[in-house]
Image 1 (cartoon, rainbow, N blue to C red):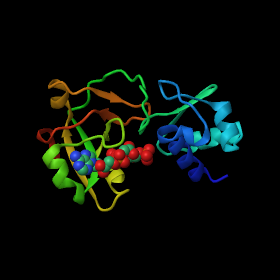
Image 2 (tube, helix red, strand yellow):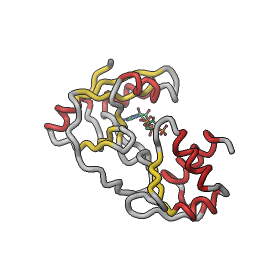
Image 3 (spheres, rainbow, N blue to C red):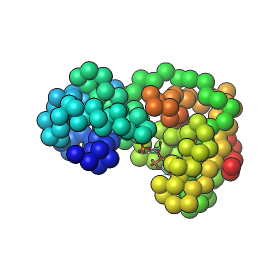
Image 4 (cartoon, rainbow, N blue to C red):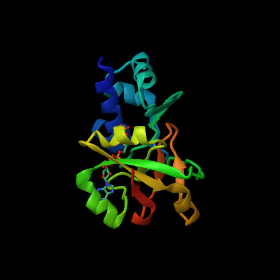
Length: 171
Ligand code: HQG
């Protein structure tokens, strides 16, 4: 079993297309582990290896259920309580998106939320998935004070509905 390949497959299924293997998620994004193992042809040990080896702790394995901690495009309510963000958070992107981002702010696109990183180095890695990374600073505490609702996923990714341009600055 290829751990990285299996992890990508799990992300795809648990965030975007559970139906592609006949799986159903509950309202909070949990899938039944036995159904998942049968559908993917994996053993419990293999699944545990993939979850434990994951660099970003993308999956929560809780007894007989499993879910992705963030990144969904399917409708789920992860149930994270709102939290006060630190003064600043960071968003990694690429130059070609900047004109749109600076004009209309950060938007979730096909995901549920805009994803923000706690530090510039992590944001740089996120941006680098798409090319030469550009890091934006987000005035998170000010946005929260102005009514922005922040939550933090089990693996430390900050989530917010959107970030208007007035809260963004290039790092
Ligand atoms: C950009 C990975 C034009 C945004 C990462 C990004 C993260 C806009 C892209 C997680 C825009 C969306 C999420 C606007 C935002 N106009 N472009 N108004 N607003 N964008 O993949 O943040 O490895 O949905 O800058 O580590 O890149 O999968 O979001 O470039 O935590 O676990 O639109 O995915 O995690 O891309 O990444 P994405 P993201 P995993």
